[in-house]
Length: 146
Image (tube, rainbow, N blue to C red; front, top):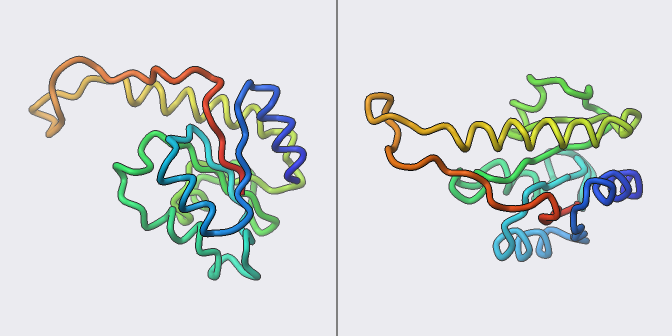
């Protein structure tokens, strides 16, 4: 599963970092602005409920994870199921049996994130004014694989 993800991300031109435990995830995520985080539902744990990295990501303030596309991979998940993604506070979920769809998923999620971050917000809508924010980070940005 990890090799399939690495191959897909390499084809998209990303620099890949792999965290081996929760402490390494916290250190890397707090110091590097990753475009994509791919996390296994059982990363450093025996159940989804014990996955400290996933729990941390779910409870993280939005300003810390706003520009990161989070993808959860697990056998208990249905690929592209928006309700499961919502329940887990991630952008998308993928079943390992359908890892071949990972490239398509990452491209579509990044495009959606980029488009939504470039829309100017009006003061009447409770947003900010000024020039639209665009993502200057090239596709060769970083990916954290857990």
